[in-house]
Image 1 (cartoon, rainbow, N blue to C red):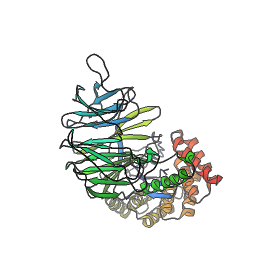
Image 2: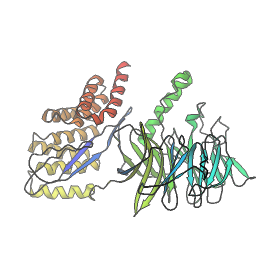
Image 3: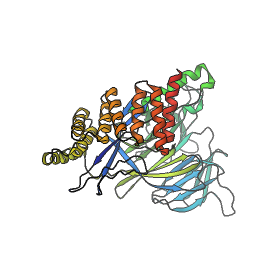
Image 4: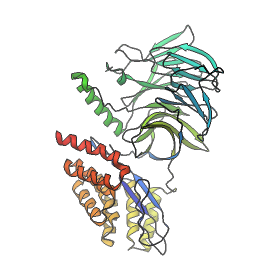
Length: 501
């Protein structure tokens, strides 16, 4: 669960002033005087069952560029990309593979021969190599090899299948369902007659196959990466099956979800009826150039980038307002910019979203601090400059210094709900929950129509275990903004569960 904590930065016009309070789309504007201005919005504080979790320093915010839609999209919506940048989406129930260009324009429907006969009744997984597509048909339990126009080439019988990858050396790697602690993870088919099995399951293979699921990806060296769906663990194997490394992904959110899963696993051992509610941690693993990308979607969409040594080099993220379940990921670089194609379901729709890095107008926090310090030197009573400088300091983790700027803004403009709200966010960061509640309460007194004020006060009240009060704030937030209703319901359920205990 996540607290959408917004910090706003408002720029000054030489003659006029506007407060633009940006919340979730559509934006609300409050104009005191008619001007043009700019607003920056930053999300960074998250609420899980373990409390507040900040984004790492290498977090990169994403924005949704476009959405690819089709009436044929159904679960599971698996993706592949060819060397020309075309996207392939396989739809199990429709028996089709749909082909789009990188701009999301429909090109071709694959899956029928010239006589209209199905080539693959239930395509459940897909990969693209330099010369062909490989599609796993779940009903017939076989791999279908086809060209990029969908023409059949050959097939290979393949039961006991979880995921697969095809190396440049022609080796087919297949991940199996784990049946016990001695079950191999992978079988590598080097030819029709030569194959090897390798890889040990995690030390605690579960009798519920779901919890043993994993996904595969190959890098440019044909090294095989194995990601475990319900644990923040990635392994790297040589092309011949030798274990090269095992990485535990250093992510607070992943670790929080792992603890949650382990708790449920323990409960499920005692009572099989409690084997529900596990949180997937790594939905899909993909490689691009020299990096590895891990897809996750709860409590927000997160794509973790690691290098070949397992170091986290970036965390790409975006909060989605509606319920959002991701299924697969492919990556492209277009005009020097990374694009992430993510298949997902937001019931009842199945779609492909294309995300790119959000442009924060090219100003780093350090540059913002310098710019607003110069503004303060020339206009020491301009309280908006203190708010903006405080925002930049907050982004750098300099919370105490940010507090001082927000306090100075409040002394200059006691009726600025924005200054109180931002100070409340910084206070929550340093653990001053009582002070944060006081600031959020003051912001609400000044402007009682802002849903995020109630939302974030509710978050802090929940952290203080004042669950009944938190529920009231979440309900008020939902009444002010129906688009936040789905997220708010998660928080209300959390608080009600704690009240019962």
